[in-house]
Image (cartoon, rainbow, N blue to C red; front, top):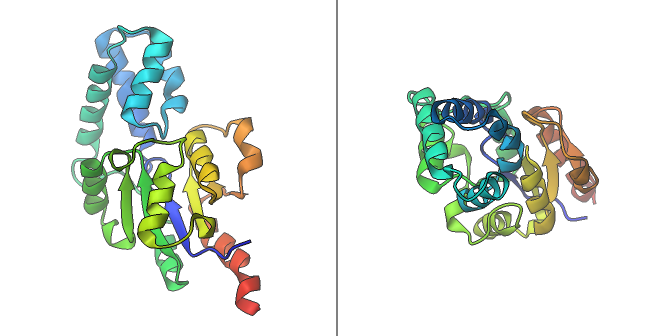
Length: 226
């Protein structure tokens, strides 16, 4: 097994406690637009998906007339109001674990389905931008999660083989993407319990972000002693 040289982080639901806000925004939009309350039941399937894939999914479930773009835009308006001052709330352990990983010589990246302007704004407002060596967003790759493209590009930009990268993710789509990229998938559950199908793919299941540096240190210790 290759030593880990980098950790690639999903953003929403992993670094930021933002999926709750998006879910609330979707609920508000559904109510305002007179959409069936059952739309929110599909929020877990949307986590980590790029916009085009999310649109296709919702229209496949609710029909081609489903007003996906208006629904999503209202959610973003709601989230922007909540995040206006300092960006999304940070998950417990951020930025402390990023500093610890840096002190260990481990590089870090954001790999998110969110578009570059939004991701950049959130990272800057929250003060986290300096803690990441690169930021790869959904609008920079051809295929979004669960395809591996976003993690492959992040590894490429860091100059590190995917087999030497761990990935911290909260969603099914993200874990599938990490596995397909040949990385070490770490699940850090957020709003929803993990899908049974991804459990065999996990390198580790963390209770919180605080455990990630220890996972990396323990994995790398044999190679450090050799």
